[in-house]
Length: 185
Image (cartoon, rainbow, N blue to C red; front, top):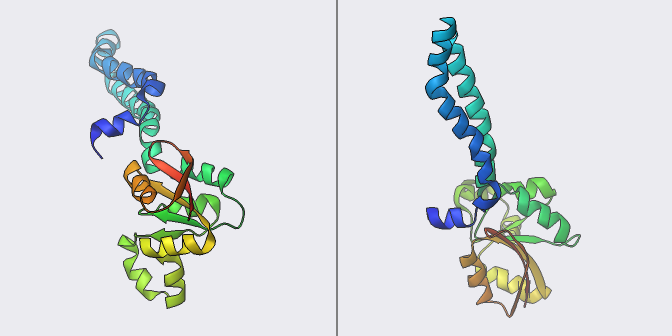
């Protein structure tokens, strides 16, 4: 993902103030240790150590705000917990977020995504493999059989690809990165 697209979807205007504290600690590390050394003739190293520790702790909050929508399954898992009807299967289209299964205590079906799962996938019984690991043609076939399915995907491009293949696509939730969809065939 390009940096400008990444920052555009990160909602910097909501958390920019969280970078003030790390910047303050960086500025303090420039002059405070020498000031402590001149005044008390010792303690400059402890000052550097403490300011560095405070900097590392304070940088956690803006980094978490920046990365959470992109790397964590937690926001989309909360939406799934709220919006997915009980006993409904959920398909992950062109992505594999393990956190969705973990947070929601469900097993999701993966579409067009095996990657690092390839070795384990080959060890599965054929019926389990064909049920949980699909290609996009099988997804659309299941959609036609069931009438509607629920799907989660990442990025607008995947939403557009699905939109071109199904008659009705409803976006139930999105955060600009992940999308929870209902597909009706």
